[in-house]
Image 1 (tube, rainbow, N blue to C red):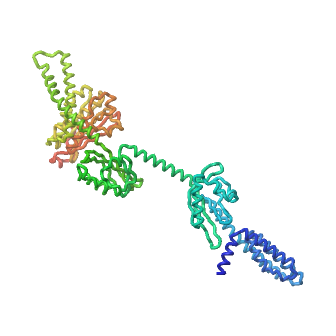
Image 2 (tube, helix red, strand yellow):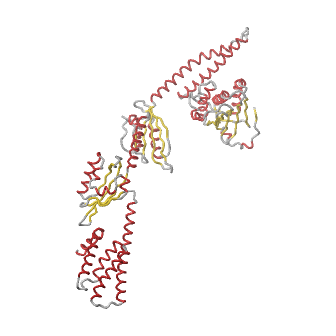
Length: 607
């Protein structure tokens, strides 16, 4: 126990440099005084000088320690020579060497200790934070030089003014910071707090202050560090503002939206979504797939709805687009989901959107009913008009050239109106579910030839070249009338969008299981920004408006519907200002699937 107390005392003693210097100076002065004033030459021996020499060497380096050792040795020799002691060279050199070696050794050790201390100090003072030490008796005893660049007050002011820290605390933070610090000191517990400090120029700095109590048994002090977190606070404030703006943005959208994590838990949901699903009895917790699955029985198609929810839960990478009707209130809801993938192709979650399209569907039904009614009401009188037009001029009295011209204009417009009515009736049948196909074997080459002949007068009026290129008959399983209608629309569309002197080229190719028809024109082309909407109902491109091209915007919609109902496909490739190619693929007749490859077919034929 005694040895432990002595060790603690020496550790504290040597840790205080001012105490070491003071004790060393007093001890050396006392020893010198005794050596000079004592009448007994043996009263002061060389051994009494060694502790002070060591202490001085430890503090002031090798040179100071060596000088002190020589001085002690000289003072030892002086009284010895006065008393007649024999001083041999060996004696003098040996004692001198011992003193010099002792002083130099302790001095080297002190130098290394000081170098280590300097290194550690530089390391601490090079950190992006200010270290401080505070004792209960002396207050702040050390603070890193970073504090000046961080807060603005000089380092000396921190050490000289005990209450500087309290005075520069921000008014809004002072009360709760001082209370937290007082509680930590009273409980001898760690202290950690974020607050603002005011600089001498009034500038505010956000800091994070962390300290802990260091207790060695008899004396304790608090050491900690201060970090400038102003930029971090600004970033947090900006992040919070961005989050508020994002929240305001998604809450202002018409569609309901939410974002789920990898497990399907909702991370964020906007106000329209909560309004749309209100009253449906959807749970407030759990994966979204399970929540939505609960209302399957409330839809008009519960099996399809439940199957879609199971598919989304099993395959998170698949996007989806569905529309469901609620059986109770007749609401139509349209849902879209898409996965959220990061740059490493890792699944992060899923975005869900929900839109109420009830009003839109009601308008669609009203429009369809109106179209069907108007189309049927127009068809009967229009048929009568066209019949009587055909009778004009067939009697004994011949029409004049002028009257015949008038009748031709009326007949042409009546034919155009008839096509429009037929297109509207087609859509009405399609929406009513009464559209059907009369499938049989048909030759795509003959159907294309008939469509070209029907369109030839319109092509000749614009001085266009019509050409059909093929190798052999192309038998397909199709409704010949419907395929002919689709080809009429495609060729008519190509003629309308091709300026005078251009060309419309049809090419029929034979593939393993399909025949493909390409309709290529040298017309205006389709703007890239409008190509995604080309097959929409009633859509007309800006090219049509700019070039006064007539039409209802239904021709391509009808052609696409007919082709896809036959199990085929239709696509296009277009460059604005150069022309467009529509490609139609139809399945072959079953007997044709094993025909010889295209390389053995006869040469192409031109119409």
